[in-house]
Image 1 (cartoon, rainbow, N blue to C red):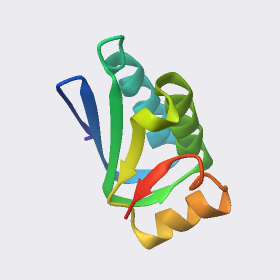
Image 2 (cartoon, rainbow, N blue to C red; image 1 turned 90 degrees about the vertical axis):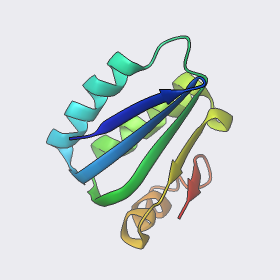
Image 3 (cartoon, rainbow, N blue to C red; image 1 turned 180 degrees about the vertical axis):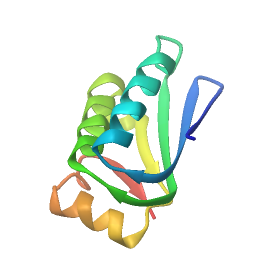
Image 4 (tube, rainbow, N blue to C red; image 1 turned 135 degrees about the vertical axis):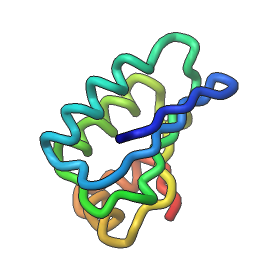
Length: 98
């Protein structure tokens, strides 16, 4: 079960497990329900995530598009997940903190 916290116009999304295609569909629906005009910044916490699919990368790009690259970041990324962002060359577009 993913967690979503809004504090001072900042939405923090804590994800768990594998963010494969099926899991990413759930994240996309949940995130769409949480994002509104009051949210100014979005943070994805991937501390408990060991795998991401291209579907999750698409969600990241969609979030960058909606919030702007200066208002979106990803934290607590494992080396394996970071490698996926690097291979997709998204580590230059998205702020990623290990």
